[in-house]
Length: 157
Image (cartoon, rainbow, N blue to C red; front, side):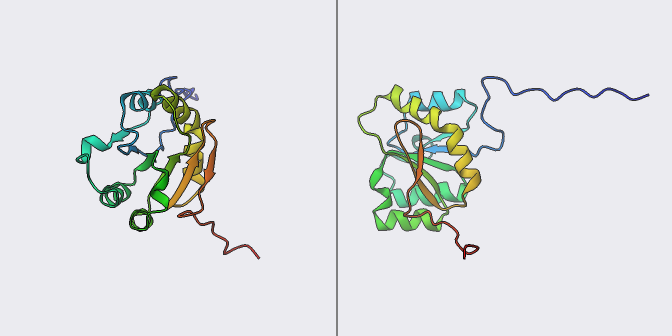
């Protein structure tokens, strides 16, 4: 006699991030309670700058460490892609970075923007090899930056 199989349990509404989602690192420009709580409420493992580094740690130092750990960087530092030392550290450590390019947002607006963008962030990570920088717009849309991210064109004729 065949034994009926149980259906797999559906993920809870609170943990709606895919289990394969990598840990996210909030740099010091985004290291606040509202964003941390909002991402964690979506089942994301969040690491905060203040929990691993002193406030004035150079960007190239924490970028190297975070990249080695495989964490995804969220930042508001729009200039990170233009500073050669930081860009080089990001590329060498194979960092996956998402930069919020909208200005003058409250903590609640920032949390809402990132939680709205979360499914797109996870999809982008699954579709693109590191290193890359992508921009996050206020509406949650994601745009490749083109500075560290380079599309593989080896199979294009």
